[in-house]
Amino acid sequence: MFHAWTHRAVVKKAGPAFALALALAFGARAARADEPVKSRLDAVRSRGILRVGTTGDYRPFSFLKPGAGEFEGIDIEMARALARSLGVRIVFVRTSWPDLMADVQADKFDLAVGGISINPERRKAAFFSIPYLEDGKAAVARCADRAKYQSLQDIDRPGVRVATNPGGTNEKFDRATLKRATILVHPDNRTIWRQLLDGGADVMITDASEARFWEKEHAGLCAIHPERTFDSSAKAYLLPRDPAWKAYVDAWLRGQIESKSFQEIADRWGLR
Image 1 (cartoon, rainbow, N blue to C red):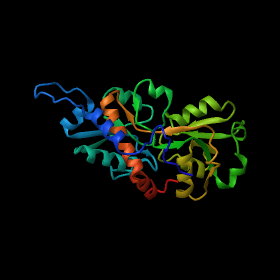
Image 2: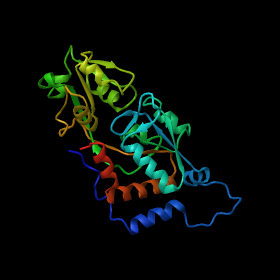
Image 3: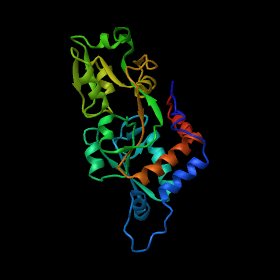
Image 4: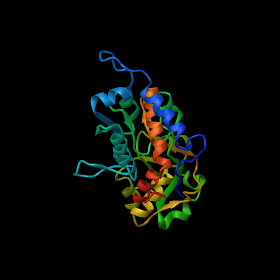
């Protein structure tokens, strides 16, 4: 079951809290014409461009359409809405899971989107927005074999081949958890589902949201107990360390969640 983030500490009533966050983000001072840019929020508005990093390989959040060179997905639509709120145009910057943190530290984009999970390692180098989705790891396998992989114990056995994409939380989870199964790294998360259908791998452990999406999109694949995830995590937008920028993005995202705008976008993409 899909749940937008609704914890009281994160999503509050719109109104005074929203106005306060915006005030903090934009600042109360009147800047002199010759005063240097003080925050990323100032830089984005001055530049007139919002640079958004995304991997383009994680449906339904971010997907680069083959041959078209266009991104689509829940977080892509959300990023476009954020750019509209700032009155700037948007430019998408392709990144990858192995390069994500290096790219944000190298100032290649102003935020990163695309089903990014909050974890301690990423927190050491960047900020996160407030979360917008609760999630966790679950297995997906060929429907004919789903009875074989009902638990981590079933999966972590000699001879079981577990597909994973490199550099993200899927590979990290597999390498920390699986000691006897064989981990097979497939370089392109956009096509990794074919490894299961074609028999190149037996199972994949990914976020429950992606497991559910694959089940709907690819006949023959089944998510295994996505309602009972192996762990818990939350998805959010990754931000360079800048308090004013985070305050603006948080206030905007909180408004999108409370107004049900985020839910409407998620519904269009079949996220449940």
